[in-house]
Image 1 (cartoon, one colour):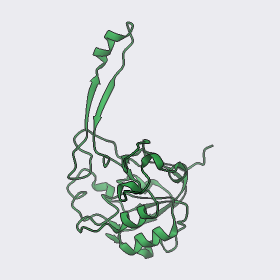
Image 2: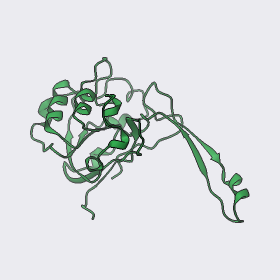
Image 3: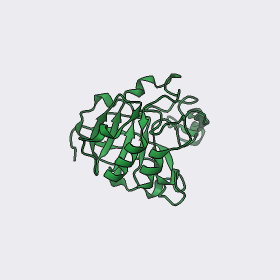
Image 4: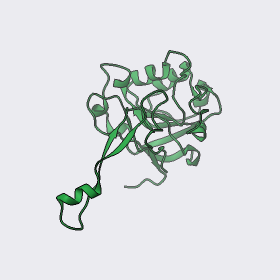
Length: 216
């Protein structure tokens, strides 16, 4: 199951940041001059910020001495057993996680906020987010990765960011702007969300997905 929003030119960066620009670098027509008849290629150019579409934060995003995308341990984000936690709370309390298996797992928080994607409601600031106590609980529990189908894992109406501070401080990567979590069972899937191996960056889009069969 694909859990990612598609990246569309002009529309899918984090609110207030420059929107992605997707253009041709070499068109198919231009490429024909360099190749044999009947052979053509397209080369695209992308200009975007890291917080575009469905993306991952690693500790360097929050901490200057945290690991960057090139230092991400793939074992944290590739074929990781899933725990889905469902909530209808705007500020998600610790009790939501009380009976869930968290350690070493991909903890995906299903709020259904992704149904507002592309609307003013989605970016209104009234999205579901972790409380500081929930962030502390998750940081202590030690999941491999934490994801949410919401605008931000933190409350963005204030200036503090306890979830980013505590989870990234514990070395736990975050995935924001997930979608389609309603199609997942609470357990029994394997999560993958791998960013490009950039040095010196702490955030980049991912293709997040869950397999419900174990595969190889």
